[in-house]
Image 1 (cartoon, one colour):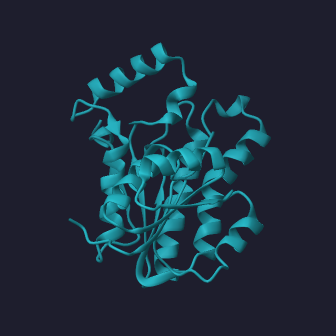
Image 2 (image 1 turned 90 degrees about the horizontal axis):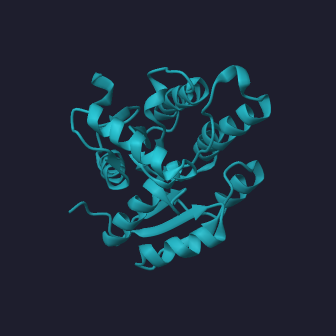
Length: 237
């Protein structure tokens, strides 16, 4: 078992999906865990699932001043994981600039804000979560592809600037998380089946798969500046 007992770990966006799966795993490892997200109600619900004395903090990472204030409390973190983002999908010609800027702010700039403000112990880690669209374009994903590619560039730059803190990014494939709840159930299930059938592993990604990959990036002392794909072999297709 990976020894994270007592390590100060922040999971930003840990109230649902991949972040919640990671937080539950970390609580079982007896980390000194803090989960942050925008919604207090979601944080309260997540805390009941996570258990283990998890601390919660309301933080909107889209807010420059809020992020600066959050990291000025004197805490030096051992590991920080950023799993936030929303929007960015749809045909580019019909996307408004307001929606495009909102999507960029909700993901890339959140990572940027945390990267410049956070205090992390030497040898600790900062891990972002992007997505498979960062290295492969397709109709309807031009903006999110650009956002994820920008996070990859941020990862490489920060790995040098923040050294010896390690900085990495997980690029997951299609994963069964609340992100897809906005779809009609029958459309979502059909899409999930289509994706699973197309992958070499013949199944859909689960939030726990992403959590396991993030744990590797957090704890491997010889890995930095990398974008690691956990996509069921989707990049091979």
